[in-house]
Length: 508
Image (cartoon, rainbow, N blue to C red; front, side):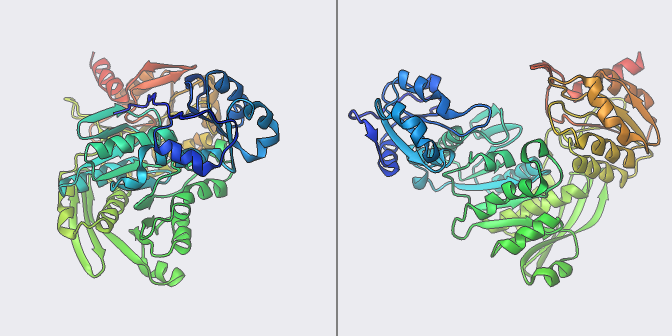
């Protein structure tokens, strides 16, 4: 197990001038170590000058050469700029896209083409983590060995680590999959973020199945427009065309229907009227769901596919979790499971921080959830309001150094559903928490009742003190996270722990 370090030099002879990329791939396949951080380059290794805006890889080529790089991969567009520097000391390899080239080098180094591990990628604004967990449960219950790379952890039987990113960097991703294969993992399930797709972090991989959950406003500080955001997401389905790849797409979502038109042989899933979708785009293979019952104790869901129907029961709460269950079943069916295998969903325990109940001896209905976008807040609250609670109290905040335009939209979503809206701080990062709250506050103009406190623990305690028997409290934004980012530092903070402290404080 490399564990992301590696130190094998593949230098066989001195090469000066230029080299074809195909020749470099052969050297990578023989063990030439590839680096993207000039500080880690060792004698005889290869440095890839990655693209960037604030930081450009080409600016670090001299440092890589000083550290002994024998090969440098640079963008063709920068040949005139970097050529005189590189070609006097090392072999220069010019490519159209260095990020994509890194994926091919990682594929060669780790021998991706020799692996028979199946790879499932899940993308979308909301639902990726829950869908990944449900797929893992289905496949593992059917006797397969499963690995997961996602927002919470990177794990497979015998290994687990906290996830620094939803989708790892390209080299680390290939190395993790290599180590999964060494552990005899049959299927790897990974969340694929829009940033990762746009930055080619999944370059060099072959996906056997891709899932599109939905698309709503998020990350526009990076993508700028919803069209750009969609195009980044669509790369998973349009730019990684493994033969017979199973694309599983949400037909209840307008962006999902658009992808269904663009992807041949895709499988649609949803709770809506399938006949309307068929009239819009013709016959498609569909996994259709119908909610038979939905309570605070779980969901009873009828699923139909290719003339067969079956009923699954799950302790998950809410209609949006019915969509996650449908997506997971659609993937399972494409990977060879049958309707009988779906019975294992009754044993699925849920996902940390995704509408997770805070068990307490006060008998209060308190949930923590990762919802931090307008749509996610809308969905989780709507689902709680559909259950038999008297009132809904929602604690929420907005992240700092992120898309400011969604702050009042998040507040509007809370105002539409919460009987009591509690505005507080989330991860302020380098922004003033009070200023972030100022940005969100206009969206609460229509709220039935508003409470505020900039300190998140205090706000949670205030919300608990407001609860009556029969009320539900939703603490939104952080979910599984056990930290709060203030400035550039992380400090320990868990919404679950804060809720339990709040219960004790209101009792004293």
